[in-house]
Amino acid sequence: MNKQPEFWLRGAIPEYQAELQPVIHAILQAQEEIHSLMKDFPDNLLWGKPAGMASPAFHLQHIAGVLDRMATYAKAETLSAEQFDYLKAEGKEKSSVTTEALIEQLDQQIAEFLAYLAEVKNEKLTDYRGVGRAHLPSTVGGLLFHAAEHMQRHFGQLLVTVKVLLVKST
Image (tube, rainbow, N blue to C red):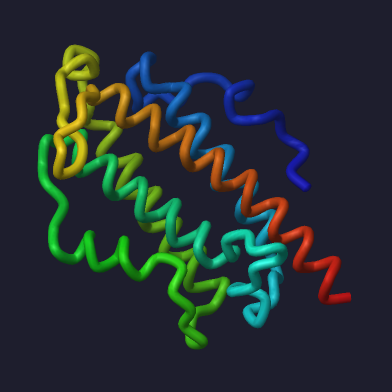
């Protein structure tokens, strides 16, 4: 276990706007905890769905996908065909997928999201952004906050699922 305080108690991360610090802290905290949770997690349990819960693989794929999609909407762009394909494939079992590969993919997406956040200016946070095909109303800040809280929510679900799978496998 990490002996450091949670990210929000480690101070500001200088390369990001003050208004975005809670988003950054939540994402980095979830990333750190995911790494700790998934260390040495057996690949053969990745697709387990105890009591019909979503699999660990789904949560890892979904977190990466949500970060990508929320950044796209925050940039006032529409989702690409590749992003829709990724969304459709989230949670679909592939025996070749490994825990290590999913964590690497997640880390790459987090790095891209954080690089985007470093460019966001405070005056843009309240800019309107339409979400999805229906262009539901949000803002740049709303999308960025949602990405962080959604990641935290799925980490919580991942934590429970992983613990249940590990108990059942012993």
